[in-house]
Image (cartoon, rainbow, N blue to C red; front, top):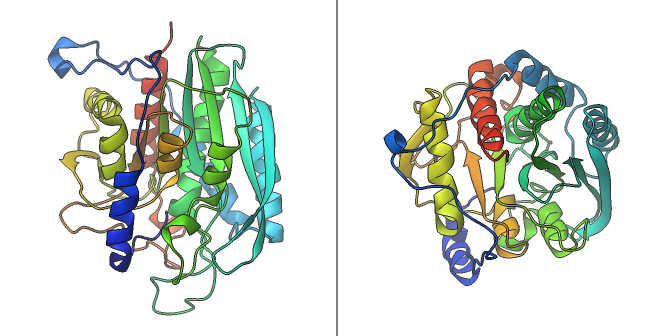
Length: 329
């Protein structure tokens, strides 16, 4: 997850105001009826053990920082997994300039389930890890493992991909693993985050690509996680926020999906999917509106497998997969 420093609050707020959201006429937001009046979600199959193993495998590669051997190996693994689950895979490679002028060789990994269908949902997460532990008291210049901040969202989406192959629903689903979301130092600016999603939004992997809506997963695997209604999600796609949170309630996960909005302002991959790609998208991200903070392990070396909890993975995975399946014609 990109760092949100208080010193940049004014800049981030201005960015959120300047970004204008528009939605094509063919985009029909979900019903905003009360829970009691709408169709209730059906609990799908989602294997939390499998999702956990996908997270573990990524962490075993080591920090997945662009321009490193572990990054290359992990990227090949993720593309192979999507291909194994029957997705049409596109590896969008590019070179971008980081905050410190480093040239980063990045790869956005894109998998399309039933690419021939126009009725599509976009699911995404970032697969890179932070090159520094800026919130730690020790070894601040060393990269983190990113079990939660990076690997958890990817692990949930890989399990969703596996389940889609098993169930074969009649719905198009695109899964994108964005690169270089978190390659920023303490002197980075708003524009230095989310380089992979910025590149993709300005260089679509398919001409005219679109989806009904998108869901970003960021830091979705930690024990005791709470997912508040994030600021940019509510600004650009509030109907979809309410829709997903209602599905979580249907499935009994309202203890994870907090009903309170949060006013914190930050940049994450969904911002560019909303404002540049013009696909209404929401962010499921761990954030506590009471303490106004992410998890204690955020951007530290404590972000390892010790913080990952299968119940949290299951709550998020079932909720997102149930959301996708409700879009089936």
